[in-house]
Amino acid sequence: MATRRDGTWLLLVVCALTAVYVAAYGRFVGRFFAFDDFTWLDVTDRIRIHGPADVLRFLEPWPTFTLYRPLTTLGAFWTGRALFGVDPTRWSMALLAVHVLNALLTYGIARRLLGSRPGGLAVALVYASAPGHALAVRWFSFFTITGTVLAYFAGLWIWLAAGERTRAPATFAAFVVGLLCSEHAVSFPAAVTAVAVLAQGRRDWRRLARETAPLWLVAAAYVAVKLLYLLVLEPRWNAARATST
Image (cartoon, rainbow, N blue to C red; front, side):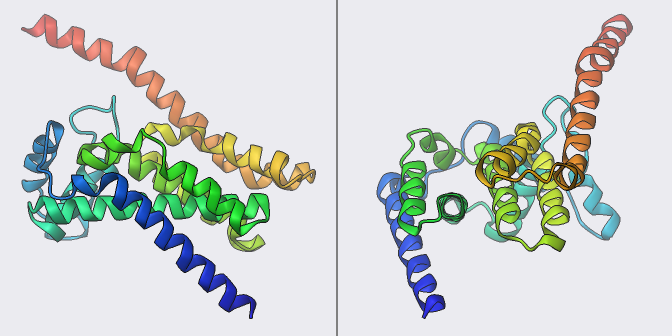
């Protein structure tokens, strides 16, 4: 009975969230590419995958390391082009589906935090109704944020829903994916720690430290490398280029 009720609720949530997004942003389906979209389409069109080593090309910092977002730029546009060609209707439908999935993850997170299905649905509907989604649904290059949100929310949901053995490694994997989506995911360790302490009421400090330490260490390393590049390496390279010309 409980499983049937869960399935019914999940179907209701999916239908409600899909209806909200289609009603609010369905008019964007089929709109053509714009702005940075053409750059990424051109760059990824030159990527050819002939073997496993070629996949590493998606991790190249293009055009520089300043905005290193390989999964939501090179990876996302190459995959989109491989699946949908340059048909903007299919691109926009897929992007709209990702937004629905993000809202569905919002429901899953809120339901576990509040202990209430209606409460989770209410939070998800508020999230889906935020006006800031308009640009993200309309502009494909904004997937740098949408894709990061997907990894971020998936990580939080995994932390709340996974079993004790898989929770920490699976959450860590989601965090790494989030960092490869964009630098915005660097706040993820703080979010996980806040959920664990404030929402779950965990006070097993040693165990919590062991589970979250890899997240904090990777976040610290990421910030250190990015600051080193922005404050030291890039200015030197720019100065060297200016001198050589």
